[in-house]
Length: 328
Image (cartoon, rainbow, N blue to C red):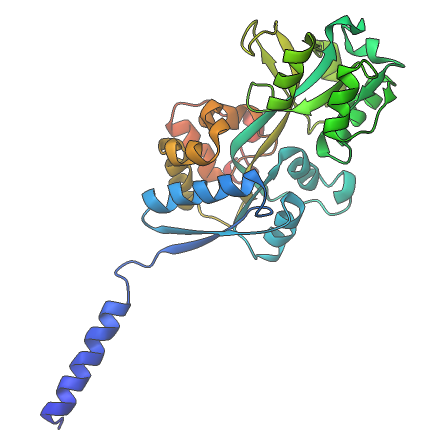
């Protein structure tokens, strides 16, 4: 028989345990991001806040990582549940090509896109270069030395059989070379449907043009490099420039077919789509992204089944090639 003191102690312990146990435990999700100094880490933190503030059953924790390749490895080891990276890299991992040859990850699934960066192919107006073939033999910087932009631009030019006189320069040196006429132009990724501040400054110094990929050139590149995405812009859509078609470096979020449930993915995407302000405040170019349509247009691997259900629920037509095998 319990004493009165023992009964009080027992009741207190029971009450304390009840208070310590949430009525409904949140589902923890590890989100692999990138280096803390990157603007995309800043975006990841804002995306996590949008989700945590609006999806009551989820607790998203952002983890600092080495970026796409590191996130892919962590996903494979079950250390993260989702990650961010460039879809050029994600596609190669999905397909087992390039640096992922023999290590395909066919269970990778797309979620959403937060940064389709327009790759501007900029040339001086007085350079005499009006098309990609005109770059043959001309001094040209394919992108900041050592960057993903540089690597991709060189790959595409090789596919097209065009050999400029490559100037492998830092961004500031590339701009100076264009300014003083030592180079006809360069390649630089900007925002969503916009040129970056560096190119705007160059435009104020000297008249420039934007090179455009023809339909034939686009098809040839995508046949050889199926992970490359393109975007077309109408006259004036990018201020001061006529219509053009260029590659876009698509950066977004991905997971695997079984790391997240359909319900978790739908809750995540609902929070992202319906709460843009916190994301735009941290990552202003997110304001230029149509997260629903752009994600379906630019993701190049199958979507997660929960993402297919979400996009369809918002009236977005999901192409057959983005429907994962588990839904067929």
